[in-house]
Image (tube, rainbow, N blue to C red; front, top):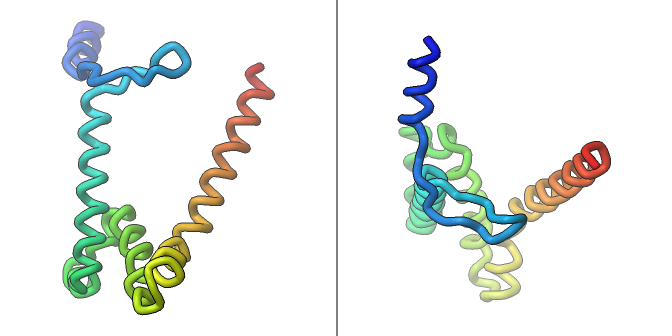
Length: 124
């Protein structure tokens, strides 16, 4: 059984694509880079489909946005921006772009800072 475990771990090792030069170097594996590209493609596709007016039609028929939350979030960001584009680039589109994303980003950043502080306090 131990041989199987060792062989499986050897097979699952992915090569390091690049290293982020922080904290002595953070290795980023190829599988992580691929997952970033897939997430970016999903976000871009959802934003494009929303801009073309097709996202809601696909959501009704195929459940787009319910299976992968990132596409629904991209749709939620783009929809208000398109709705208020007649008010101008800054006061309409840019201001309404973060109507939904703003609270999510604030909460996410605040929670991560709090979590980091707790880790620093208890780990030393």
